[in-house]
Structures are given as C-alpha cells and as structure tokens.
Amino acid sequence: MSLTAIVTEPKNAADAVVIWLHGLGDSGEGFSGVIPALALNKLDSVRFIFPHAPKQAVTINRGLVMRSWYDIKTMELENRADIPTLSQSEVLINQLIEQQIANGIKPQRILLVGFSQGGVLALYSGLRLKHKLAGIAGLSCYLAQADLPTIGASGINSQTPLFISHGEQDMTVPFKAGQQGSQQLTAAGFDVTWSQYPMEHWVCEPQLVKLGQWISQQLSA
Image (cartoon, rainbow, N blue to C red; front, side, top):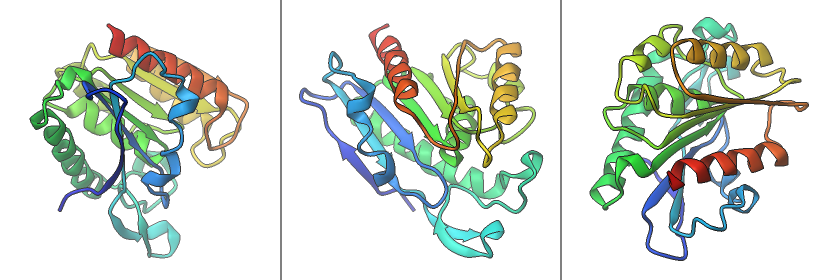
C-alpha cells in the first residue's frame, strides 16, 4: 500500500519538500490551497505534497469508514491515538519520504507539517525517523505517547527545529494538550517555536504567516 497525494511543483526544479498531513475525515485537498498564505515567494524550488490518509473505520464515529491516519477509540487524550494503526500510517509516511530521497531530495531539505491527526502523525513519525529532517510542525495536535519526547531526544532529529501551534478555544483537541506537548518537548531539549491564537480547531492567517516564516528559515539555513 502507498499513499496517493496532491503534489504542487515549484517554478524551478525542486530541491526541498514540504509534506502536509491533513486531519480526520479530510483529504489532501483540504490544505492544498494553503501555499500562498505561507508567503514563500523567495523559495521557488519547494515541492508541496498533500497526501490522502487511508480510509478506515473510526471507532468514535460509530465505526464509519473515512480518511484517517489512525483509529480513535476514546476521546481521552492519553489513549486517543491508536498506536497500531498510527504505526501503519508511519510506515506510509516513511515510504513517501524515501521516495523523495530516491528522487534526489536530501532528507535535510524535507519538512513534515500536520494538522490535528496529521500533526500527531508528523510528530510521531518525524521524531522516530532514521533521517535528519529540516523541521517538523504540529498544528492543533497532541503527543501520541507520553514518552515521545524521550524517544525523539535520543534520535537523529533531537536537534531538528519544531513548530507547535494551537487555538486557545479549541474544543476538539484541548489547548492544554498542545501547550503541554510543547512544554514537554522543550524540557526534553528540543528547539520549539510555540504560538497560540484566539481560535477554535482550525488555522488562521497570522499562524500561517508565522509558519511560513519558520519554514523559510529552516530551508534557508
């Protein structure tokens, strides 16, 4: 099994890649129009990939089949991410990264970005990856496992910059979950850029501008 995706090629030959992972029930199309809001005008060699999550039954949604990076069996944050199905998606993301490397993109020029479920997967797979990435961003998400900061701190991405951002009025993934995740990663020694906004479970323009600046910084280093 491999992921299908919406791919946006840059004006020039790609020498960097941003892989953007969507949330529960969405598809790659949901964020495929976000590129202009990031204002990456000076980076005209960045390929954007918006993968579609596999379709699977989601327990909390009465077992309905939808695009989902992992099953959710409970809304309790400690056990919200079903690790077996999350690990299956991790394999697919690793395959996607390997494809980009095989196509000539250095892993240090690859960024993982994710929203909600996609953010959980971006942090989970990125911090466990065997390749050094340019950066990992998690928007409106939480840590899949309590020991993920410790696991990541002993891996190759221990010095990889992280971007963590959350809405203060988020009722789907509580603001405290994102804030605590950021604090735990910082305590583990990670270089975390944290931001918060007066919004619910979504993204906003100031947040995307800040994210775009952060992406530009990582790819210009």
